[in-house]
Image (cartoon, rainbow, N blue to C red; front, side, top):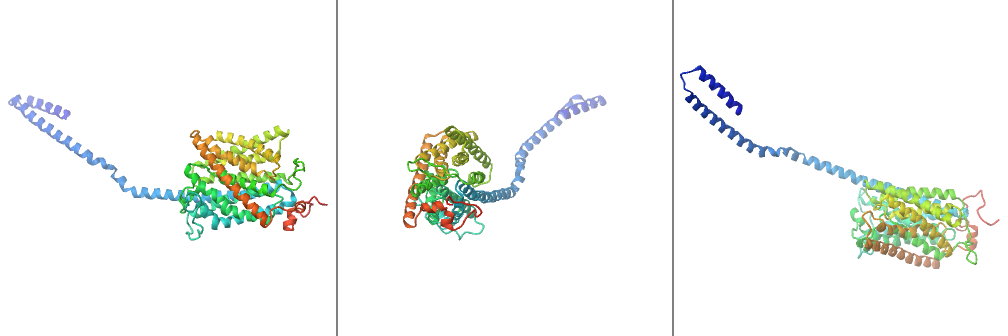
Length: 488
């Protein structure tokens, strides 16, 4: 507008010079009229511009048109994530299943050759029995609709679910945990337990003992998969056992302690005056191989317990690496200090103790804390092993120190090393939970083993132990080209 006025003034000046007859007053008056009209036009344009801006502000309106596409994309992403979760559960469940082979190899290596077939049969059949019993009874007791937070009371028959139901992946992941809890006992009672008696125990543990403690701590977990959904009484208190230091390992370790107390020590394990005698395993490299398999499977055990495939699995895997490594070192060094030489058996068991110790807390502690958890777990394994021997309790593979003692330690570590800070109340809840579950499991299993011993017999005779359970129970020999018995 200013430029226009300048042009007009210049034009008027020219007119003034060109026509002397017309007075400058008239020209200036006309100029003022023109400028006023231009100012009025500019004001009108400004008002129009102000009115147009709000109308043009919703220029983002085209984005609204893309909302259905965004919703469809979000739905597709959720579907992919959901399917990834199912694949993750099945894949990690398969890793946990491989741990059955690890347990078998450890027990084989630490036991004598004459009991090899018996050990393989127990480790193979206890999972077969656990799977069937857990399908029809155990799963419902563990994850069904809660009866006051104590036990599930439905979902005993799940075959009416659709073929692509999300429940199946969840069930598969849970059954391998039941099998793990069951097979822990086999090694502790090795070389003197009758085969039939052990199989009866396996069915009762998978069908009753393990689901009971599992419901207390994990009862609501089935809700996301269409069954149950109510919290068990420990879960309601805030008890945390991420992958099962207590629910799986503490339970199995407590049942192992009950079993070895009922069945007694192996023939020749202790002298009449109580002096311990070494019964050497026949294949320590095989036992070491079994520990490697167990450690490998533990990545599925811990990381798979997220039940989802996301970034949290990374740190869990790191913690599951650090704790067993630290525990193996501390167990070896502590036993080296006690007996003057590094011991292979305690070193191997130390790593397993560290894995048990980090199982409950692997998701809520840092790798630095996992190092401390592992170091202490290794020492606990050594101390508990020596203590059992001095009490003349014969644990053939060290299952009680590894699984029960470190199950306690790992569950307490959830509160002791919580990345959000220590909470004394939380520690109390953790202590209540781990001792409640393990004491209940011990009491029930002690009664089971006593009953089995009365009805069908639990302990093999001294002669059967001398000949070997392969011959006494199965009329076979795992190594037919070699002599596997003490008898000539």
